[in-house]
Image: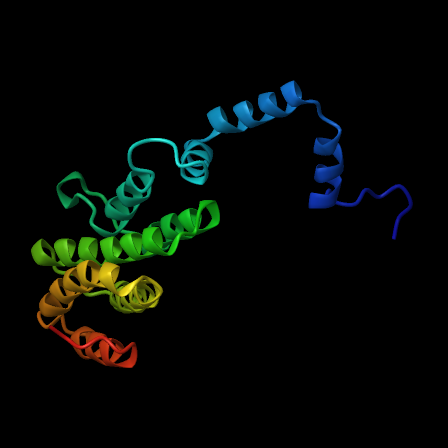
Length: 183
């Protein structure tokens, strides 16, 4: 190793530096991060429960990427849609919010597939995996909260018979595996 080579900074290096900031400097730093990127603003709003609906920006991202406007020549991206859910989980991670976002993802796919034919195994596999994630989050909720989400997933499952790729049977198996009787 060459002498004088610098190591990459780590979280501990940053934490030490931030720890030395006074209140005004720390607020200035948070402000700069807030205005630097839309994702930072969304994260902070969600973390601190600011605004009427902290899930709305995450839903908008999910909808954009799994239910694109094909008339505007928009493409879909499973990765970008799933990232919105991951970002919310990092910001807040409440089971009810994650249930809402994962069910919304499935509904957005259902809506897209209702008017646009897709022949992409990755899209369908991601839908089935998200369906399973939704069931996991729903199972963590109180039983009185579960019904609403299960009804919405049943609507997705009902339409899955039209899509092929074994999606409907996979969803049926998952419903049974997670102990949710089909309606």
